[in-house]
Length: 388
Image 1 (tube, rainbow, N blue to C red):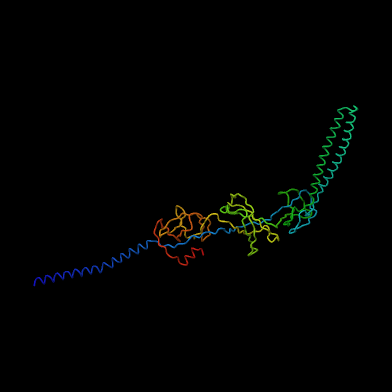
Image 2: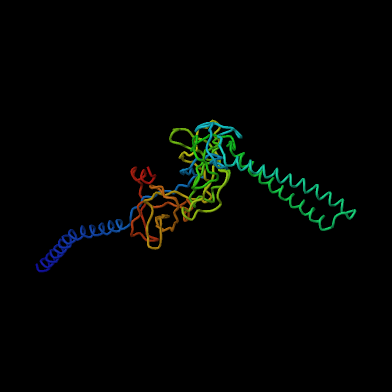
């Protein structure tokens, strides 16, 4: 009987051990499984999820919009060239005049008296010259027969030369005063429109120009306009003669007036860092008014291949501006140089080839070579990335 009881005791012990093992395993396995799941989820959460966007190439030509100053092709202030009083004016503002048309007349009593005196002096000098010429001729003939001395003949010839010089000086003075008197009449220097009249009948007129004198008229030729634009330095190499440009004014909504860039200053203004350019615009019907403010749409070609990326793809680091590119789920920090800032988007002029995919809202802690998980962008993220 002892062997049977010993065998039964051994079976009971084995069963007890199995039960204990099963009880232990039933408590440990869920914990192990939970720990493995936690470790897996922690590892997955440690990998940042990113949304990608593709850089967009900029167009070959850019519509550059700049403020402009519209001026007439020819403009001139009209000043008097003689002193006196305004006798009469014949044209007022808005008058269309032709070249050589009489604009005004000036009374010049002082110049008239000076001219009269100069002509009298010239007549006296001419009379003296004629007498000296007769005397010199006679003395030269008498010298041949030794009727007069050589000294007397030389005196007569010298007096003739002196009187001739006096005649020439008086004649030049008369011509000068006649030219001054001719300025009594003011004529239009070219075809145009009178844009200002600053004088009236009886007004004191002083010759010349400057602070002490007043311009009589202003005349402009608006059939062709000069439009001056200050182009930023970054576009200076692209702003070349021959580019097309459109003029837009608020008083003509929906209309564009074509023009062409004809010349540049070929120098950057150090005060504004801009290049002054001139655009020629035909204005045959005088629809556009000189002196107006306008906007110029300049078609500037892009000589450098550049790309547009959303502003929320930029990563600011101490070593410089970066974007985060992703290839094979690996992040790479790409140094870039930006050009123009358009608010929601910026232009990248160096650092990208266009084949990259860059991260939207990259985490500040991201490092070069880090593993990332690419996820699909939501509609809101896509609109934000597109700058809409």
